Image (cartoon, rainbow, N blue to C red):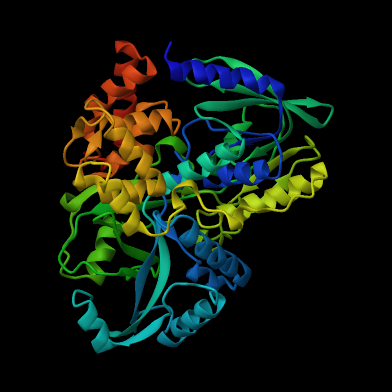
Length: 544
């Protein structure tokens, strides 16, 4: 048995001592809840049937935004909350979250007039009074065309330009929140499924967990259970007799990833689709462009949600409409990804755009006192979600500690000077071609990672020359960041999967390193490769 497997067994045995809180779901919100609750002095266990951030948190528009479109619904408190959290994230994770300038073209054909859009910009600017980002500006038609000559000039009246935030890797953000929770004292168990709730009368007493790696089940004593499984919240207790009502009404959003193309904007585009007036985005990202997203009710397999041909056609057509010279086709799509938004269940006849993006905390005290569900929740506001739950738990357990997360940074965000960080990483002797990538992914932790990579010739061995993946980086993912499966390493730690070829060249050599470190035999290694290949089918067109 490998040292990693032994350490996991020790962690599982330690759960028998019990917890104050068990959080189910290790996306940004579940991890944020665990972080805040642990810092209040509570004993916390965070579990996920998959990996940290392996669900919706990985498949968003990669935006840390204030919710400009929420102003249309007059949800000013949500906009203000989002803007406040955006500013915190820019300071707490400067390696992951950066300023992104947006252009909003004004067209005569728009559902929203130039005057209304301008008023929205003014309101957005006022509500972000404490921001460090640039202010908005209004461009004339000529200035817009001079700035972005590829934009459709027909009926163009001008544009607004404003700033929001972009997260390079939502996956890495999830990992860092979980690492912060663990550093504070939380226990984190991935690939661990909640399969039953223990009650004495109508009070929570325990939760039954199943190890998805070896199939063993065990009972963990706990005083409260928080279901923060995102769009999976209705599936967590589906084999139990709790009789809870349906709570999730997820909609799926698809994004296409393409290389730079003719007319591609220097800044991001945020515009109304020509065919139906929906908001469409063209976003510079990771040396490529994200274009999307759709917003469609989804009742299929949440673990394998993927783009339909209709979605490819819609996104490509709308991008070609706003940037006529692009002429994008299916051949230009490197891959696509689809995430399912966690939204509250409402009347199915209602428009999906009318479903609130606010989060809601529901206490099922009539069924099991101490059982809570998080409904909704956004990437941007995870810290506030954690604080809200921390306040609730503090009141429940008579704790006087206040939330301190707003005063903290995430583990990789302890040095905001990225240029200085790159110099420190380069000084370790790591290959110069990977210095920027390591800092962008790991922040301050990149210094120790680079030192590990260069510590021995074996760790410096390059497995993927184009990406710069080394044996040492895979070892770090496993020993320092809790990766247990091949997909954990490739998709949510090293981020090699985000290459144009979905990182397929790295699969075999990475599996060899994982097998050595995690004690896999040939059968297990082959199974991990097959599982990852099946996972990648989510990202290719239906006809491919």
